Image (cartoon, rainbow, N blue to C red; front, side, top):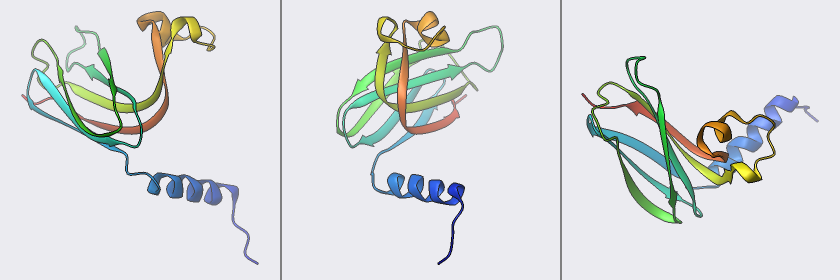
Length: 129
């Protein structure tokens, strides 16, 4: 009988678990002031976006919204021109409020009042010029 390393077995389990779901998200930016995310969720969750501006004078900013099971599309208005900024979008299992957080010195809870947990899908891109 052939023996497999623990790493190979772990990768195989992760790939098979990923293949068992239809969940996905994709992001696109058609202009410098919004990002639209489309996706499919096996069950409800939280969709978050972080925008990192091209210049260092503006701080990164994050937004989060609840999404239901099934197919959906969500447009995140950026409020101002973020031409060339990088964005990251993620579908999360739960939103943990600061008063329920068990992570010692959680920087996300300290800065935002919450943190996200249970990453389910991820995409990244660049805001259009």
